[in-house]
Image (tube, rainbow, N blue to C red; front, side, top):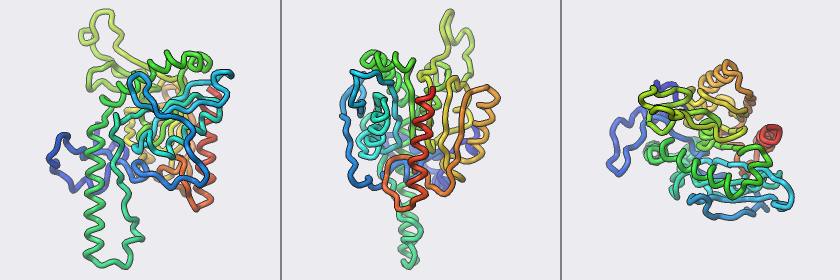
Length: 328
């Protein structure tokens, strides 16, 4: 895959040719923005209502409708940003879907290692500072970006998908009633988790590294009588301001998907989105794409904003994703 085809390449990573010593090589290609790895302030008066527990050997945050299991519910996976399952905002986001009738399971995609905080001082905060202080701020920004790249190298598709497979299997067992009531499992994803909604919605080649999308191995590689593909794992999915997405991730989609996108989003460039739309249209995949202007990457996750436009867009994005999973 060409480097320019991958969403979310950090501008400063061009200058980082060398690998920092450590147990895992730093990633010099795709990365994530600060909104994927740090939370907005939690809106006043909101607090999580679910619980942290294990499911299929994986740590999860579980939020259930108050009427469950007396009244029928559906099963929803919520795939989070890099802030993970202990983020108060992510937990409240899961609660919102539970309030709408979904048994909501938010798995720990990072095996106890959420993203390091990558909040950086905005450009405006550097105004009036000395030239030396500005250099120090830029150096700190680059260092934090490199830490995020190194963290991403530990949480690849080969690490995350097996976690999701365990959770999917466990959901089918423990919450068989909800899975059956919905005719399958639904999924929503934000930032880092958005890409994995696409992967769960796809028919993809089996475990060998390097097989992606709908690409098939040879008969000899697959083995006689073997099924070379896996998935899709979900019935329908919705994703908001996804990161780390490449055009290849739209190959092999088999279920309806809804995309919440940010206008001119460097984390999910227009050319990647447009290529994805073309692929979905060509393959007759039911989909919708809504581009939200004037909002930051990460806006759809629960968080306090002073700007009415962002607050309204956040609620509209939730309604878009909720409607999609309810209608499918």
